[in-house]
Structures are given as C-alpha cells and as structure tokens.
Image (cartoon, rainbow, N blue to C red; front, side):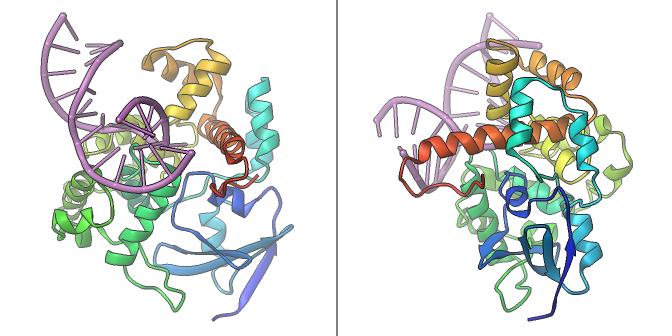
Length: 288
DNA sequence: GACCAGGTGCCAG
DNA sequence: CTGGCACATGGT
C-alpha cells in the first residue's frame, strides 16, 4: 500500500462519474473505488471537495478524470430547456473522462444489448481471465489486442459475451495485425475516424460514437442509444422519428458539447428510472 | 414465458 | 433510405 495524496476539486463527483455508464471496471472498495488507469492500479476516493489518489499519480489521475475540463463553461453551452435543466441539476460534477482507447473500444463492443451491470461483469471477467494482475488488490489490466487475438472463441465465450465474442475476437485480431492503428485516428477528423471504426466487426455508429466521445475526446459526438432515442422522442420531438432525424436534431440542437449534454440526459433518465424501479428491492448501482 | 438491455449486420422492398 | 429479424445472456 503506497501513500495517498489529495487535491481540492471543484465540479467533480467521482462516484457519479464512474457510475454514469461510460466506464465499467471501477469497483467500490471501502470509501472509494479500486480500478486501474491503463496498467496502473489505482485506488481513488472523494470526501467533499477532497479527491484522494495514490501519491505520484497526480498528473495521470487528473488527465484521466478530465479535471481540466471547464465544466461550468461546458454546461453553459447546453440548451436551456426543462429536460436539459433537470439533467444538469441532477448531475453536478459529472465529467466525461479520458479512457485508454483500446479498452474503451473493446468494452463497448461487448456492450451491445447489455445492461450496464452486465457490461461491468463482462469487463471484469475479461480482465481477470486474460489481463495482467496489477497489484495486491487483485485489479487487472484490460488485455492487449494481441492477447485476445490469440484466444479461442470458446475461451472468450466463458466470459458470458454471447454473440459479441466473435466481434471482439475479430476486432482484436485486426488491431493486433496492425490492420487498424487506433493511435492514428487521434489525428483524423471525426468523420474519418468514425468511418474507420465502423469497419471493425461489432462496431456500428453508436459504438463508434461512444469511443469517439469517451476515448478520443470528441465532445460534440452524440451516441444515440435506446435511452437517448427515447428522450429525444418523448421530450423533444414528440413522436417516433427516423434515425436520420434523431441524428440531425442531436447535431443541431445541443451545441458544441452535445456529447456532454447527452451524457447528462442519459444519466439522469437512467438513474431516475432505476430509482423508480427500486421500490424496496436491492438492485442498482446508480448514484443520485 | 414475454420483454428489455448504452446494437450490429444483413436482407428485402 | 427504411423496416424487420437474428443474434446470447441475464434480469424483472
């Protein structure tokens, strides 16, 4: 156990950020969360405006949690309608973090038609079986593409991936074979990067957009999933719409940080809907 | 059982 | 371009 350092943070809520459906491998542990940033094991915690992390990892942690994002300014660019305002009030301190690209891509390939807690379970299972154990805490790294590429389909299926296993395996193979260089995409315009991502098996527009938003820091990109579709149709467009209309509206209406706005809408709707569904049962990991 | 989950790919019209 | 359907798995 190394020493702990801390800094003062404003407009940051660690728990909400980690539980908002953008990242899936952090596990509550005592008064904080155990996880990893790339292959560095981490324990992070927050008490009020004090943010705790392992001594010596300040730069890494600040970059990962995007503590340099000017959240107040970002939120000011959001439209001022009732739905958006309610989401903003519900989500103080929610940040879109900077994830390592491969683990973000791979995890979202496994996200198709899965609930957040299943995505989490799959991510942890893949890490535990095929990743590298990083410390005494038992936290594991996400396995590199070359590692997954060598597996038999059967091995991946043991992680309860279902029909997504083939896609993950094939994508890992292509990246391991350098058919696609995820680093190069950083320098490309969003449209071009999206086109290349969508050529990977199991990656369509929604997942490509998640990766662009959560790993490539394209904060204007809006992944339209079932929740966002529902919100757009009920609160904004009043009725069912084609995919093209949903895309057009998202791009036109939410401003330069549309992806950020979308994340607030997503988390608010999902969290409140889970709270309603609770009614005494013991499900749900969504912070309020 | 039916229905749903941060979808994708493929096929017919 | 659009709608329809299969695809695994786990939870209400």
